[in-house]
Image (cartoon, rainbow, N blue to C red):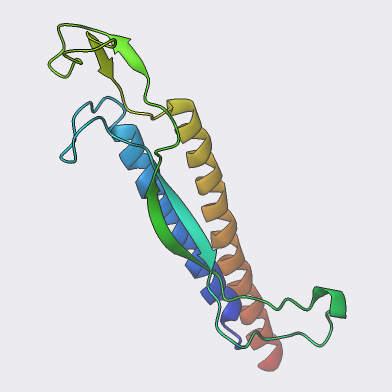
Length: 153
């Protein structure tokens, strides 16, 4: 484990949270999109993150055996998934060009499954995580600078 591991781990978090914020912005910008290239209304996307793991784990000699699951190397974006589990809401608007033309739902427009409140909560969470990772980098830089100051005396 190198001296810059804390910065590398926090940088991976910054990168992952930036992707998460980009996906949230995409969801919010498509809140009224009723027709996509794939067909149908826009589907909400979500980011799936996984730990960045290099084998073997570095193990601190100070950790108890019960915590011997190792220390990772940060986080990575594993994939961006579309949300097919949440139903798309319907709105009655028979004059809309994307209204359902036949069947029991005739005259209804299928809207995106994007909930602005959920997206805002996710955006606040991603912003706080981004800030926390930036604070880790700033703290590491200050610690390294202090070590250089001590060593220079």
